Length: 372
Image 1 (spheres, rainbow, N blue to C red):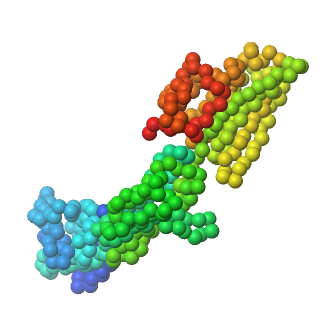
Image 2: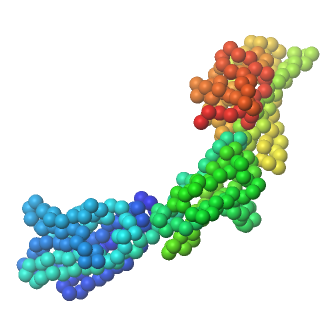
């Protein structure tokens, strides 16, 4: 059952014939129960009562307007007719488990009732799959909707072959992080709501992870989330002009996954050739992409030429100008410019990139620590 599902159980009975139903409801979610009664001509319902284990939850009289004489805080009257009644348990708790009786006080035939039995269970919730940038922190989260039943929680890293390795575990008297990951991986010391925290994500961390709750009496419950790791592009732009006046411009990026390169040439496109693109991939998934553009004589000085890099890890494209060697294009949107202007490398301020500040011609975003 999804977390948005509201369960509706209806008990239909006629006279002395009763029908009952059993349902499993998820903790912390709403549950709706309903009863219908068939009556003979001349019968009328004076009062409806809902009970669980002989405890009165809701009672009302079918006056005009309707009069509710008793109501527990976690129970609401959802709807009613002269021969039907529906209640909602707003948030199911473990103590809501049991059999519910809906009793119609019918005149003149007497009381008639239906029974619905409810068992309460829980499920594992996750934030969904996660994308992280290499070198930056990230957190995988998982929680169980009946935390008081959790005795131990484990996080396992799944291998492509289907095997798994326990990377961290926690119980009330035990805490452990796999030895090779200590110092850059930690686990929250909580049972029902658990977080696996990576201080600095690496490419090797890319995998699917299973959070495993050992519970009583529900047994072992699991949920799986997958982590993808991006490497932001390092961009380098070069150009050389031959004796014939033809300029060869190259824009090269190294990133994971591969970046897409386009060229922005101001005015009319007078290139001798469309751009040529080459790819080179390493075993770790980092791909070098080079786009080569041939320009006619004089075009380099007459036109604004930019290498535009698109990457899944960048909120906005990155533009680097070819016309002025080593100058970063000012066409960056404010968010990206702000992020780049606060870049720190290895603890030292290397450069503040702005509209008028030149740089070396090579931008390595992977070495930068960006503010969260």
